[in-house]
Image 1 (cartoon, helix red, strand yellow):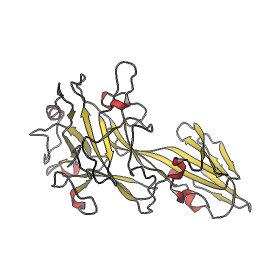
Image 2: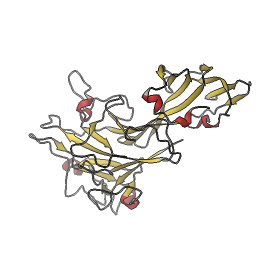
Image 3: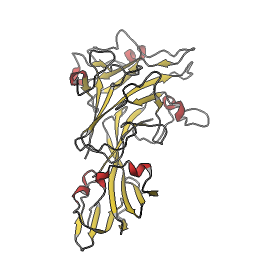
Image 4: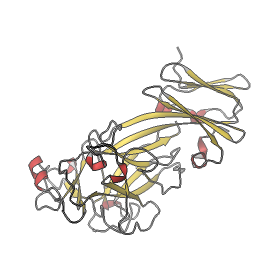
Length: 123
Length: 226
């Protein structure tokens, strides 16, 4: 059973497997060549499939307690996978504890999209 | 994976004018697992330089007094530094809550982020509710009133002077009652990370009717490309 957090299928049919760890999944190591599909694994074991986007983006959302009970605790709460096509961006926000997934669509010039660290987009 | 460390300004100056780059010795790294912050009143025992961990009785005796006529800003924030037991385990966070003070709390990120880090306050580390009185909670509907949170903060990363009466209420993770720590400029794009600054204070409303030991969790939400 493949436990990669994501699997990238390129247009030349090569495959890249991400790692299973949310904190180090290997997004920055994806080879720079055209992507056909990305299979992103949900906590349930199912996959979200993003296909034929121009660019893709993945990041995780963590919270660190700095004061109060259990200070120092770091909890990764969400994984985000985005696809951009024709000036539109689709975002899947995945609660990694419950598996619930929220889907949003943005214009490319939306402030949230514009303020993302641009280094995260696949080329 | 980008990680976060919290430093507090414990130097000798009362109103810090210089940041971590210029005066690193004035900052203390908070060991979040063992150390903790104490928000308290002015007291002869529980104060900067205390050599032992204060007892519950000492903490109660040092509590800020609610004023029937004016709001009270909790005057002292102490770092309980376990590594200093026997020497000086209580260290005052200099400039906490003070007007015009920029560099009291330092959030050091060792790498880039995907979005802008933000400071949040919750009832506890489950980060599900904001019903404690200190966060604006009420016994009557509406139970949640984040606009009334006593925990206030201001980002000072690039703002040279937060001015007087600064602070936005913190409660939960909505768009309104959080404080963005990169001055609204978005993600940390520096590969080597960045130091972000804020000041924090607790404002007890005039004649507040529910004196109690109030707990809350301060949290930083941040993201990274993994």
